[in-house]
Length: 308
Length: 256
Ligand SMILES: Nc1ncnc2c1ncn2[C@@H]1O[C@H](COP(=O)(O)OP(=O)(O)O)[C@@H](O)[C@H]1O
Ligand SMILES: [Mg+2]
Image (cartoon, each protein chain N blue to C red):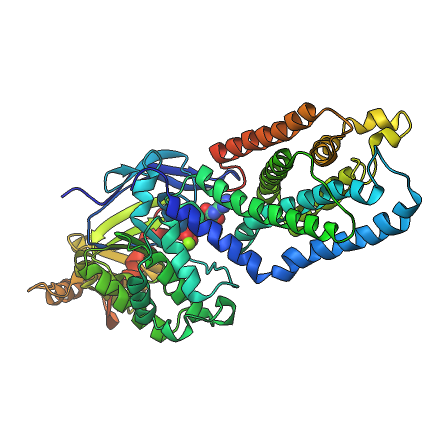
């Protein structure tokens, strides 16, 4: 299966000289929910904006279902719906009008049935005749989603969809996303919340300082997260790990007061009893043991901080 | 999905016209009231003391100039707001992400701005007939000048809207450049009435050519030949189109 979105060698340097993206390569399959995970300023919005035509790339190539986004922008853009990070609406227009406008702008024939269904699904029906200016922030965000879905896109981009969003909207939004996925719509979302990527995505791409540093199936990533960590508090601080323990993947932390051992909690043999015996044999006394889950958050922080 | 995105153009045009309807008082009543005031002041108070200009009564003489004045200022402000506002509210993202070409978008926006300008021009004309008898010698040319000017200054306004980064910049071109040029451009007098060197200096003012051509279509007399006037309007239009083409090619102030 050829990917529905293919990004190759995309770079972006803003006019200010700010390098936002270094050589991004990414392929997203049709029907996938793909999460771009990264801290603020990583370049998530820049990448999405390039794909959607809001920002011009400095070099590289993007294909949407085989259509080059520059040469064949009509075919490429017709497939895409975008819900940007910030709410941006014509506040004087009515909800219904602004959603219809979006569909028209994308060259689609009027489809009142579709628009009505959309407004109902997003709990906008009661407010369809209201002007946008009369709506709350959450309702405005719903309008943004309705506009993005008005032309029945094959690929939906959600830029930080849950930032500052209440529980109800979050639930409704994921409901809409699941239904879209069932219909074969590809969904690409950005987030800086790991839980969100974990909850929704089939695959996760971690982006940091303009580089895509990891792309992994969420399940595989979670298996990595099945790793546990054993922290051994020393009775007395030690200068170095004794030679007798050289066979163990240990790390010395907290100025020699703590030994850290990462292990797979699902493995038949975690190695802990043997390790503790070896510690005793090496004459190392410890006062406390502690196991903890290495969260994706830790891995994430590690990924992000480990590369300077 | 190939070829023209006519539905997209229609969506823009309709939405722009709806915006006009929402602000119908501002859009239509203001120019009408202004015109009536001009008539009372220039046509009534001053005009009664003026002789005929070029064989035309002063009240009738100023009508084409008045229409031009409004067409220029309204055309520019309508078109500039049409594009500046989406930039300001960031709703322009939707336009940039849509499968619509820049040319199509410009056509739709300018079409709406020009429609509005022409309507306002006709409303002023109708208002003026309540004050003075007006004859139109070359109705075809009158409509042609009206349309060409509306489109040219719609394009010019569009450029201003793209260039402007704040509301002051948005207002500065119409108020500090276009209005003075129009007042000094023979809207209310014939430049033949000016002493030298002002007459010659006036010939550097593009508005002189617009007003002159438009007035010629009414009364068959103008400060300059009608061909020259026509060349000027078309020239302005071509210049604006060239600038727009460059902007869309480079993404200047539209795409980071
Ligand atoms: N229009 C712009 N001009 C200059 N720099 C920008 C612009 N937009 C974003 N940047 C910079 O590019 C980098 C990536 O930003 P962005 O793509 O918004 O990150 P994210 O969405 O991951 O938070 C940041 O350093 C940001 O300051
Ligand atoms: Mg962002």
